[in-house]
Image 1 (cartoon, helix red, strand yellow):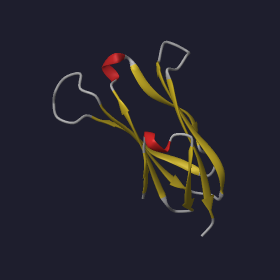
Image 2 (cartoon, helix red, strand yellow):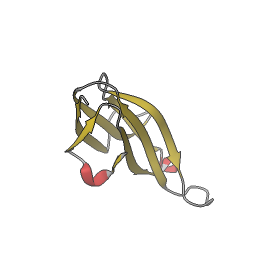
Image 3 (tube, helix red, strand yellow):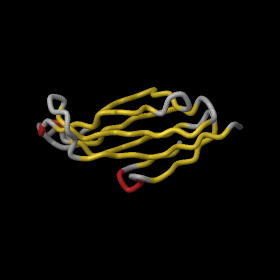
Image 4 (cartoon, one colour):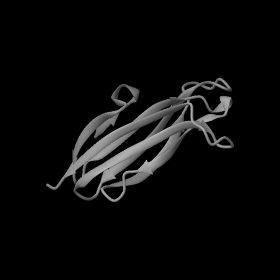
Length: 104
């Protein structure tokens, strides 16, 4: 499984069909700002999980948002994720990565 985080923003990732990709980004939902998946990498990638994990049990604590993808077809696709409030159209940040999926 390939794990990428904010340090890979605007970068690339190489996978083979059948491989897994995990994207993890810091998030603090109590501020109202959450990461929203804008481009899910279809048809080369399939989203299999979207979850939030907070360390510890402190209310309002920041955590990490995770997306798990499986490479299902060869091709080049882009993942785009925006940090914004759901009720506001403009984002305050973006995360993008180009994913190249090769056939086995």
